[in-house]
Length: 116
Image 1 (cartoon, rainbow, N blue to C red):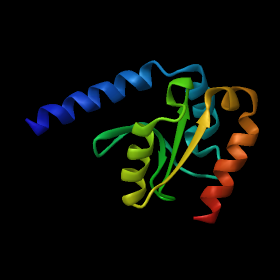
Image 2: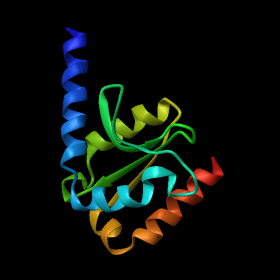
Image 3: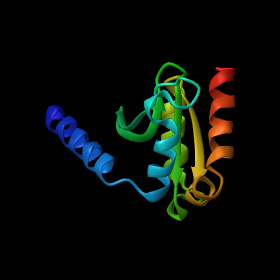
Image 4: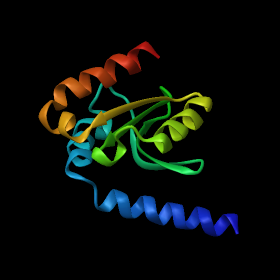
C-alpha cells in the first residue's frame, strides 16, 4: 500500500503547512516568494520517507527548524545522512535562534546557498 502511505504523508505535510510553529512561520516569512536572494523554497515538503521543513531544490539545500526535542537526536543524524546521500545539504537551526536572530539565520542560509 505504498500509494496509501504517500497520500498520508502528503496529507500530513499539508496539515503541517497549515499549522506551523512560530519559528517555522517566522523563517517562512523570510524565505517565501523568493525573498531570500531570489531562491525558491518550499515548506513541509515530502522527500523520500521524510518531510523536511524547507527545501530549495535548485541549490539542493534543506533547512530544518528544531525545538529541544531534537537535541542530540540519533534519528536526526540518520535522517540527515539519508538526505545528504541524496545530494542535499542540511542546515539545522534552533527555534530560539530563528526567533531572536532571523537576519543572522537568513544570512547563513544565503551564504551556504551561494556557495552551492
